[in-house]
Image (tube, rainbow, N blue to C red; front, side, top):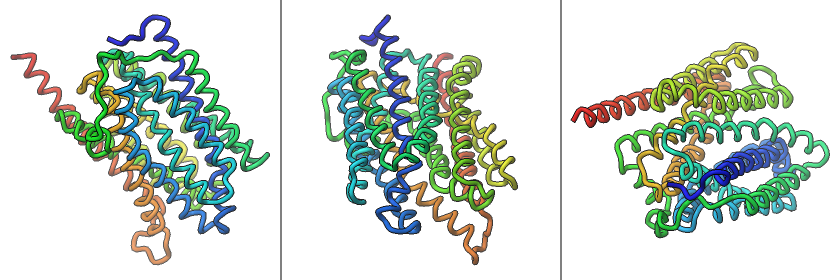
Length: 415
């Protein structure tokens, strides 16, 4: 039972929601200006392209290393201090990047950002502490909606501030993260009771040691594989979407920004409003599988879309994969103890980070291959079609895992 109850629980949920919005807005603010700042230091657009790719992989790599450490620290010392330290650390990182005189400073900023943004593992563990198992899909859906709200506002605000100065978005992002820290300092209670904490161990805190936990239950192992495939498919957007939209549909920054805002709005609707209703009717497992199949159909339609309008309409079925992530997380939390929730979230984030390193490099190479003059497969939508197959594999695996788990539960009840 959580030590947070009544009005304190409501204040804690409000803090998690507000902090998620502030952190994602802060991250989104720098999206429109970071590549141009890199180009300023790199000297050319071509150099900026591969350096930006390295920075994305560097950020994801640091999440892979740091997530299980942060999750295990929260299992030992509690969620509150870890969340607060990560939030103020993220604020300091934006100040560092605002003052960056060269690429080495920006690279250091990406390293620090990868570490401090790993606090999301503790945010999810916090919600597991204060939410009963049957309500976690809804709770995670609300966090996902908060992320989506931040993703809508962040890039739009960053584009506006970038017109004033390429450094202005970093200063505003630092202020927003600092505001989240002060807010949490005043209202955030601890969620993990002292008697439920677990001693810190480097065996569990290193990425590979933490992922041993994922092998502790057959369904948990299968869901971890689904998580990897889902994140791998999703990174097709960060890897090639902007380039693809310009190449195939002649879209410019404004059209891209509007579509990204639309993605955020659809995610807010699906995760904030639909998840709890669909789960209540069909259960976590069926909802997860349905969301994965819907996402696979949507990405395939994007790769086949002959016009920008058709690509935009394909966002509707694609948005259904917003049903998958909160239900995946909810199912995984039900197979570990309260004292292992931080370790679980760290291990899950490490799995996602591996996908975050490998997927952009893979889809970037596929895209370059597909549009080259001598390509045997000269089709610019190839990356999206491959991503659709990856997500379809996740859906089939999720269906198999869910069917096996349902049978096992039925046999237990019968005996």
